Length: 251
Image (cartoon, helix red, strand yellow):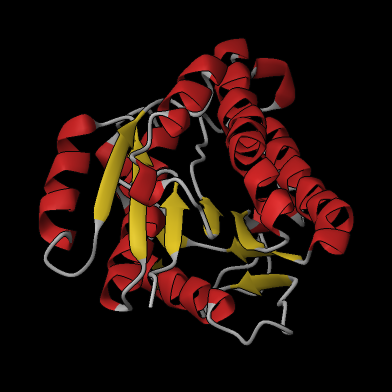
């Protein structure tokens, strides 16, 4: 039986890496994408013991890089059955009037345009075959705006809208589309948001049990492993201590 192939963006850390690990354990062939080549190589070496793995180094925000990389895939990896649009970032936590326009550009380029570029590179082949599965990783920030979240929230609201639009446009082509919207997940995310300030980043997760990357990865695997007639449209996932984007009980 031919293995299904999943392409995962942002595969070098956090949710993307955890998803790659779970998929590998479940005999799914992998195309792992990221910017950090050494991490991609290390992950390929680890997961190749379980499944077939190809790696692509590119920045999702660079249109030509995206298309050139995906077109360069070896024949055995060219048929993408499952696309996990996971790459994303947050930069800064400022009011709109104090925001850094470079941070704004980075969030829109990666979270919105990057998702579009990768999807555009993959979706035509799914449409041609009348089958496929797309999982878009959103955020509670795409459901509720919170103070100082402005442009990050806007970018994730765009992901939420694109998820709905994809499902409508791809419906007649038998392609399933789903979104997972996590609350507080303890990954490198906050370290990026606070520009490498490890102390600030660690404070985000103090006083409660945050979600871990593996928690979300297990849910992603559950979603993509449902029978062909089942499409889980949209899931918000919180740690138990979290009740909304802004309500979080700390001990």
